[in-house]
Image (cartoon, rainbow, N blue to C red; front, side, top):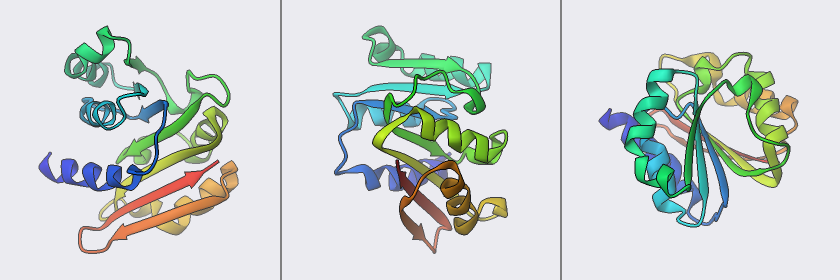
Length: 167
């Protein structure tokens, strides 16, 4: 868990100059990243989505205060059919979760649909072991989904990858 925490903190540091108002964290797990997004962006509304009912319960418990104040919502669902209207999000994050997504191209198209023009989709992965999604494969899939502007950062020593695609 500690290594995972360092990875998402490294990933989130790439957003320092961005001020999103409507954020979705896909595959939100236990809600730790949601809590950090809420802290980093106090003006934003943050929605967590996970396909696991257990994860949704953990995330709701962890972020109870922000749910009560209506800054945070946590929903059970699939990235293949996101519960967001077209062009409503300005930041979508995915931390070590795309390996589990059904049909990555279709899921990336759903993210593209839900992002407003200029919105960002940030993928942060650890690259050892789960090599099906290397940097070039992810960029190819993102291009097929409609994205055409990317910034890529890799921490070679830790095998970490951060891709930010702009709609």
